[in-house]
Length: 525
Image (tube, rainbow, N blue to C red; front, side, top):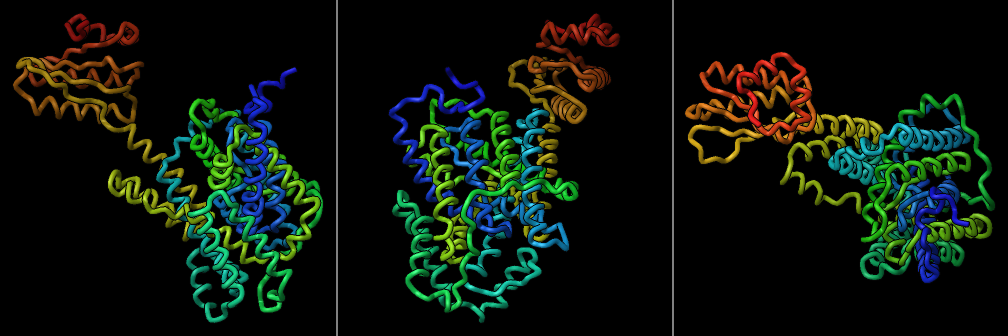
């Protein structure tokens, strides 16, 4: 009996020869994603076990329902920063209350993703400008960098937190209080991670530094010299976390922003990792898979899930053929939660900070900004505005403004004139081409551009307007044709409509003025 079509889609036609590659890839990815997810939990201001639990049911849900064969789903630095920004809007809450709010937020993210699927909003959300995503990545990268420096260097932190610039100022102010032992461990871990990533990518850097950090603490007394350790990780599975109804309205804006970013990151990484010949990524399926993963995570003390670049790259490089690799990673996380959690008590905080800094280093690649500077200054402005607002007003504001600016860019693009002059050798005819459909936003701009072309060429008595690329009739289109015809007539010249399909003409003939104009020779077949 075959499983239903919505279950295990990546394992249809599974070959026995793939099993070894999937198992090894799942284990290799687990050595990266599990400690990395634990580190991301600290960005959100949550206990490290929350990151570990994100590698259980949310990842399993995607493995069972998702359509990308090599995508690894846990959480990302962007999601963690947005969770932190959302929770920061809740004031006067105890740690236990903030935990309840965090898991309620994850549940709301799942609801938003599923509602996006029901409303078929996937293709619309994907229209968010790449420049917006660039600005968000820059803002997230710099925000994470500033937030992790105290843990990396052993500096005291301001209990009131603050934005990016306040955090940087706090780091500079406390540099004289730097812990030498912590700085050596943290900077050493960063160096090891970069070296392994550059020259030995097959070696799981996060696992290496985690094991080295635990061995260092177990074999020496460095914690007595100021090296801070993570809080003990409880052994066992996460308990059921029920939503806090009173927090729903306060958390909803953040949930919408996180759902947008979760979907965009997941689909982008899935498409990047798709091998030639594999099925095309179905955005509706991805919405359902991540949405159900978030619902499951909200009930089991997890962060909102999303596909991650670095962990998916490890999965792909290790030879993953299907989501069996993801289910193997879930199994490894389960073993850690049930049996290995006590060993993590000797893990230095500086090691987690080092993993986070190296993971987000790729977000600060300036090449996208250079490309925008050379290709489209408007897109460059969007990226810089989103990044600046994210750094000064928080990443939730950055995401909201980025979505708004995307709308502005879309309107700017669709409002461009849709008319060009064609090459011709005729001295009597000026041929113009309408290059697309017209609506309220671009009809007047098209009329004005066409009139400029006509006025700039006053010697040819006949102007033809080719509408062969128009696929549907709108009232603004008809208004534009009538006005342009009157303008050309007033110059003592003649406008002729050409290239209209029978379908287009049948609609236009429902308008009395067009019927009369057609009798006067306005239309040429």
